[in-house]
Image (tube, rainbow, N blue to C red; front, side):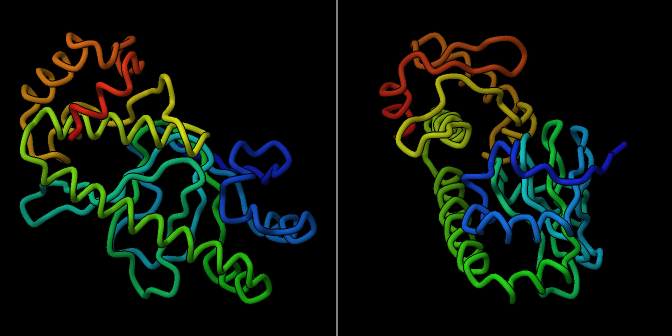
Length: 232
């Protein structure tokens, strides 16, 4: 069950990376006054396709997926959202896609109308969201490129590399270790592979020394250069 609490910007782990980082302290306090923290359990829906988009949100921790479901009930993951990412279809009459927690997650949720008013008051926030939209578009194109790679090894290695980069707080280096937010079934669906192929490729990456698996979802990069070569 989701819970909601008042924002605490001073202790926010993404305060220097989220769109609101461009605001002054007074402007940030003004924005925080209209928002609430919300916690989500893995698999819980934040926004559902077909709903009126009454809210928007910034991801503080965890991971989200943006997905659609076809007429046969098959889910297609369209994009992944990492901490500091912004979600919510502002200025749209109806949400086209669902946004679901891949892991236990925390978000800052804002009423859409109030956030739109904040964009009018704080032009720098609007520019920051525009830059983030451009980054999201680049990430979506990179995901399409990943899905189109020729070999299963390149697909899985490329995804692990992308997850390591997303988990890092540095723009220059991937995270040395991280929790993989996707299940093997979700990876298979995302990359157009079978679950068995995903398992074999993860085993290959480990046996060749590119990664080491730690526990159920933990991944440690043991040779980032090798992983990069395998990703193509």
